Image 1 (cartoon, rainbow, N blue to C red):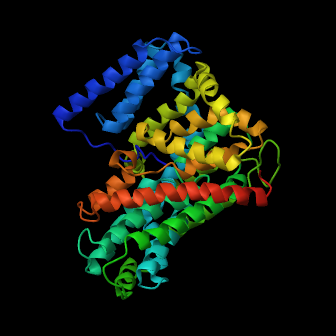
Image 2: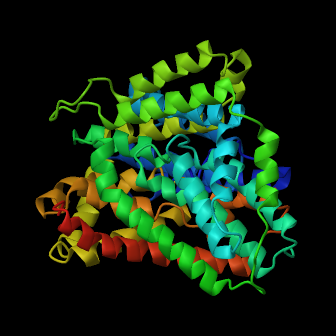
Length: 482
């Protein structure tokens, strides 16, 4: 899910720490380059892996701006590993990149016009003032915002301040179980519901890119059919178990005056909010009804074309102005993801995915007769890889691309193979694994929760993702996907 993301500009590390981690990154890269070349890999492919390992440490430790680190990675791929420039830089020419760029401006438009805030307070006003009601409201807010805001970072930046203001209004003590319950769950609800939609998270363009590289059909509808129910199962598990394990010190019965006051302060619906809402609704309709190579539907326009036209509408309506082009979205994120998308071409070009297939497929094929066990193993692999990849954007295709064909032959379709990878894409045992949790920590000035509470709920998320995968198998069989 974004990165755990590189979505916000990476904070600069302290000078001494920065140089230490730069040295660690260099040592990791050199060690990967100098060990005996594994069987099945060329020396050039080994250099590619060494450069990627170097970049991963830079991203995880935030030695420099993550976008700049991505640019450095591409430069090293061209200069050291002799990757042809059109391939190393191919991520910026990919339709998935332009889909991402366009939809990020959707989120900016919702935030700038106040539409996202209005929707959030309106939904909050519909739920009772109990803990269960407040958490249910934030689930609904996250679900609705995910339809128009693909960036989990933007959703967190909208929802977490509202939740923290509510915690303070309710008089909950800092780091109390009640405060931690609301804050951690709110951040989760800013992230997890979006997994149900193809363009509901920053993983969506990665999935689009993966399926495109394998020439596999993918639509909003086919994605939603596979991912929606398991995602909602995961959300329900989080909402229930979080309340059970972080049982608040006292029952809550809150007045709705806080929310009503915020809604009143926003005034009546403004013209630019209405235009933004119309653009988003029309875009969602067009995304869900576009034609595919195997199915002719209402129109032939791909997602990125719809997004590009919508961006022009926002500009003509004055919602996005000249200064907003530079400041409205995270160019750190866009530079970062351009490099990641390019890797999805560089790795297969150097037969690295074939090498990975040689390592994984023999073991995985032994589990193919037991799909539940196989998908649980893939979920666990993803959770382990997320300790090494702070973005999930490398780990997802690294597992998917080698396994897609053999698993399809074994009766597990590509979208089902993607499901455990996506459900397990946002663990947060450590802050570097999940920037949204780090954002929430900053928004609350480290008063929202303590480390023990965070570790407990992080484990709940991981267990819930595995349970959702297991129950998903029965659901996918019921609807005929498997």
